[in-house]
Length: 413
Length: 169
Image (spheres, rainbow over the protein chains, first blue to last red):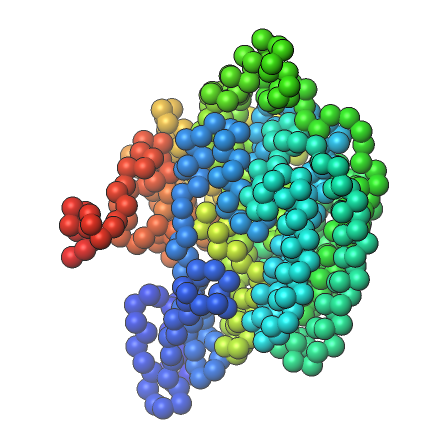
């Protein structure tokens, strides 16, 4: 067996045990530990990279550092009290986590959501998508050495967070979505501020493009790196912008519309070769599409209730408590016990900023879920990291990881 | 989602090919579920994959305590061309939580199967790298099982490390 063959054989499966060093000065394999505390790993991700010189031969992600047992915690809470914990899984896509969980519960309950609530949900989901992509863009550019991008992206993110604060009182983990609708109608002034944001955002996204798209360093580092063909991505279960960058126009908002996404006119940006540059372009183009959806939802925002009138599920309005005994009873029942959900199982998939965010909820008929499982896109997508970086340079590993956009809160849950 | 009739047809098709492979079907709130015999999970999934359900959207464990067999492994299959979903469920007991790994059919099942093993103790035979994924490697017990207490574990601080179960050694 030649020396090279020997290395090929050994690098096939890198285990946690120390890799025996190869023979000769030029062919030594180096196992390099990256993380868990490293700014370029976007959270507490640990990577065990096997290098031959500067070339990555294999990489093993090691996760679980921020595992907090949210799925277990949710089993111990009433359905409506589980929403805040579920939101904290993927901490940049809290509206999506809440939407997936609530969607599953609503499926089990068979409750109808009023049109206004559906539109308000769409507005907040798309704002959240923009916010999540902005954090991704800022931090990814930071990894590539462009620090100014970070400030520009976080400037727009501030506007989005201000909007969240206006509608729900919280900037992150807002708990705005409620089973049957949303917790409160949008306050006066929200529409005007959102309208300004919708007008402003495309121009801002143009600025990002001006800064990055013709930047030689960015192009050099992104174009042609981290290429994985569509078939491999599909077999690994990868969804979201990563899959779309490889040319597969798969978006659940179009394929299986939920929350009246079929009312809006928007496009699915796709890439061609599936390299890091395509991933960047797809997410960047999604900023425009999301803004378009928000604009349409704002213009067509229907009048009517923002939450289901079913008092067995939704809290009665505060003013009713002073005058109606029935409202008081409903309020007491909901706050102490919560509502009971008929037995059954539901899996509710939605299109999150990173791919299919699905929530599985099993109910045993009580007021607490018997099982909550979040299919987090980052968790599944992380499996595609090794095929993406194998054979590339270690510097490209950082760029690829940034373009993969993993979120450790969602991975570890 | 396939409707109830299509689900029964799929089940009949699978029963013809692999006798006793489908124990039951369930259709609830537009969700079609095939309850498969655990030893035959691989042929069942292979057949569904050839039928068009090429993606495994999600794989998760469920503890059906106090029903028997207690543990369930759920495969959420997705057909991207027809935009169709079907669920395959296999129930295994806590006494012998063994099921074949489907990483060969769906390479993306590697992490979810490890998670299921980690949280429920279901052993996936033929998995290339079956280790704990989220919990520490030396952890004992399967935290997502229903009889595992919430908050039963003392938090390790410097003042109580001597009373802990030997992590400080």
